[in-house]
Amino acid sequence: MFYFLFMDFNQKKVLVTGASGYIALHCIKELLVNGYKVKGSLRNLDREVEVRNSLRTVINNKNIEFCKLNLLNDEGWEDAAADCDYLIHIASPCCIEEPKNEKDLIEPALEGTLRALKAAQNSKVNKLILTSSMGAIAYGHNKKICCPSDWTDTSKDIGAYIKSKTLAEKAAWDFVNKQSDVSFTMTSINPGMVFGPLLSNDIEGISANLITKMITGKFPALPDIYFTVVDVRDVAQLHLKSLKNKQSDQKRIIATSQEGIPFLEISKILRKLGYKKSPNNLVPTKVIKSLALFNRDMKYTSHMIERGCYGADISETISIFDWKPISLNKTLDDMTSSLKNILK
Image 1 (cartoon, rainbow, N blue to C red):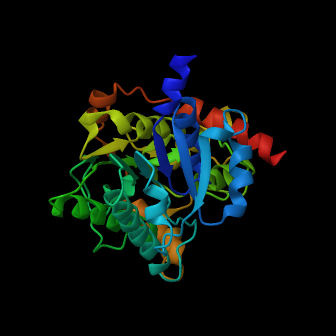
Image 2: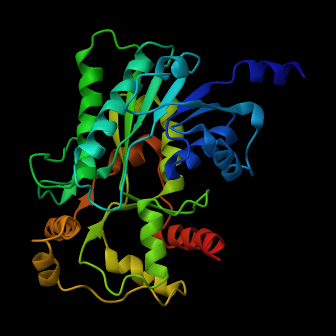
């Protein structure tokens, strides 16, 4: 009895921003299963019930609470972090289509990251985990194997989302490196294209929307582009393990496949899993390039085609965490199974 009282008294609390998101829900699940208390931030507290329902198989009501935070507003950030030991900053705007104005993505990503860092600095937070992206590493240049020291060149035409993730992560490292009295350590997690099972019924995120359209036959053909890919459960595990693993302090952790995967290969796996409506043909590149003259999304796709195949140096991730990534087949199998339950 006294043992359990002692354990409860020493439970660590983690502030997780953007608690309703795809990656965030998996991170919260891992934290709760591993005995942490969680404070999840939401832009709209009306979504608390949705988040609790998404986590109902692991939820312990006394171990999760919610707070209201907005990436573009100072209100509540310091209070939210005040009683937390760790901060995992995941919240960042994301959209499937290129926005009319890139600032709609860049400003909240950048300002929200700086608000999270300032809140950590003014609290007892020991470590901050920043969810970044391979997008902050692999674009605007032609490196075939990307490593943690690489940065995306934001002077190139790389698309608003990739630019937002790059500028936000750069600002975070500048904040940490330029202040002599920073009270916390930081790790950034840089995932590739994230696939895997959904915990909520929200299929509007990029990867869920993409796979849904593929398996339901909404795409007649695919562009000749490549991704490095990762399972959402692996991403969540790396967030969790980074909290206490000092070898990850002040490092960028690449969380993705070692090799780039053709978009068409993902579709072929889906077809083998029984989703025969998934496309098995490529859109001619010259068609996309001609459309790129008039359409922002086609312009971005054209740049992705030009980037071609690239890989990632994940040796440090494997070394620090003894990381053994989930196979892409299992990732897609589990993801489509969860989507089937949502779409039925």
